[in-house]
Length: 238
Picture 1 (cartoon, rainbow, N blue to C red):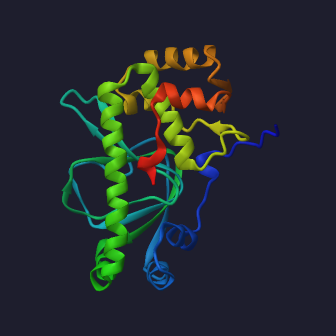
Picture 2 (picture 1 turned 180 degrees about the vertical axis):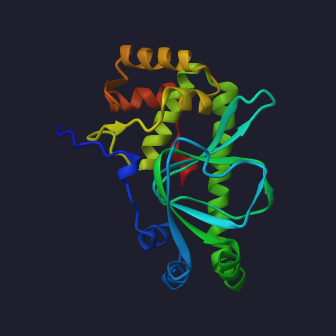
């Protein structure tokens, strides 16, 4: 078996036109979004890109990297509640947004005004239906995350995150390793654990022969068993 070089999420750019066409939006509507005024923003990981508690009159599309939505509890402990991978976006939010946005890895995003986005959607019912389907997909992912943190054990939580990440990044798990985009603390913030326990889980997955780590690269040495441990059924990502 030939193992291809792993590409990090920060290297994985997407073509906006191809992404929207692949997702099912008609070409004539794709052109409207291509022509919509926007700016390209490079987002670093060191601090939040958007803080919670402020209005969001903008639409964002991830071109490369990964963005996270996060919330904090009363003591300041953070929970990552959603991820956006290349080709995915964050739609405008009416009023004050109760979540913050931060990059998982160095990311490049396209940012447009909500009023320009809304004008296209309002004038084209087919576009509204398209984005409604995308919202349903994100809801399905959110429900899966609730099950993951609420019902699965610590090993299954991390295994499920690895499976979902590989699927959303389009990794050919039989031939290509995945560059782990997450720090140990970020995995803890997603799966509702401590970073110490996450470290133990990774070591256990490796001892079981399910993965092999080479620096930040993860090679999926027994994908079927990893999926079984995770309870990962990718249908919700469709």
